[in-house]
Length: 583
Image (cartoon, rainbow, N blue to C red; front, side, top):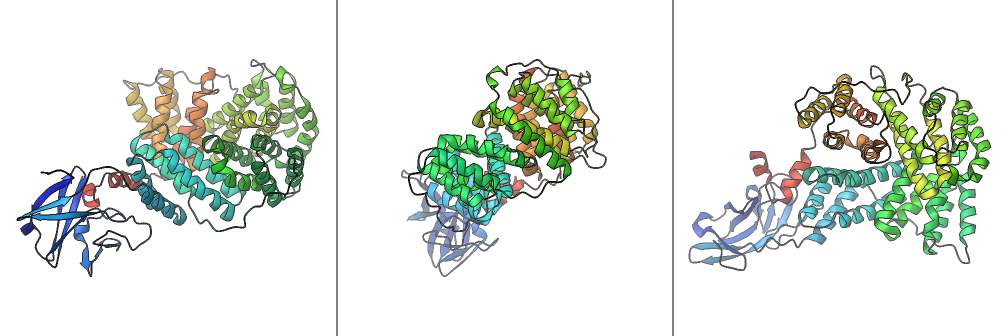
């Protein structure tokens, strides 16, 4: 029992003989370690701050307590840790009242925000997934906002990308960061921690010092910066672009930057660089969430690497496509897109052209649809649903082409960002990049199908939505690639909630070792199912979920090695590993 000020009676002096230790549970999930060293009683948290091993199983020598699992050592008096990637140990005052032993455990108020942010920083630098997960769990359980946690991750990422990553690697990291954040907000508890930890793990790595980028001396107008960036992009001079973008930020011209970047990214000579467009959209989302003050180093450096990246001499078909888009570009740039409002058009004719394995016919059909006044957003939806349909029907007996197909899908969806930030002309050019991606994937032998062709009409024989959903998740876990697609269609034909099914599929993805491979596609599917593609009433909208389910099933490793997230959650509650394993 207690007597105020957090004092708790934990037993008698005789309970802790000289040279021995004892653990006393003081609340749910929390225990205190008592050590009798030369007749003096010391009290610490029993949970090792490294990985939660009970410290009563450790060794005390010369005032230093050493954990018996990984050898982390602590000052028994003050709790300071002598190792990296390990928090300081919490110690408690001890009072002996007669033969009773009392410990001042204090209240449960969280006071270690700065220490745990430092712990997260150490984990990010080393890339240690356990330290990242543990620090994130501790911060979340302490009431630290996700925004503050990600700000730290973003600050590290800016320097990591600037000093250690090229355009491709840095872009993939940003995609995983944004995907982890957006997917994580749809979940709670361990599922949310998993998504946030994945974002942290993706952003981790060395962050070296680099020369400071200096603002160009004034006067420098935006028109000059605009012209320079376009010229340096054509000439593949990324380091010069970075200084231009940095100057624009310093001059308060940030509002123009992403329009310029997207216009550069959809230039004809960037055909085949599909991830450029998608990753620029992710950078724009980062700025929307955290502002230029937090994101400027990351955006200026990585965007410069993207739009100034090197390009090899294209092969024949690629060269033809670049020439075609170059010829079309003036009309696309001068077109008045306010008149592009049609949503009802011959979608099958466009799809047939896109799948014709004739790049001139493909590009011509896209150009004609724009000329006929079809809304750019409606055309984007066609490309998204076509990519989803191809994922839903790709043969899997040899090489399903998941990497290429998911690139098609994510690129098509990212054109919505191009439209929002770069304008309709840039998005219209982006459609040709998506068309090229389909042509470039012509090696994947997927039978043609009209998008308005009805899907099978069978329904699920499960008694309710929860049972039907569980069957689908079980098919994913058991790698039943040939059955899972039909099960998803049957579920949706039964009138069950697709959003709930998507959430369950997402959970299965998060907890598999292939989660980083699938995370961007999961994020896109959430957005499209809830947005234009899923809400359009289109006959092929179910393929959004079918394609994702098949992808998740066919690439699943099923190793179940993500127990560290569960452990991190229990760790943040104060439990030792022995208690967790006993459960």
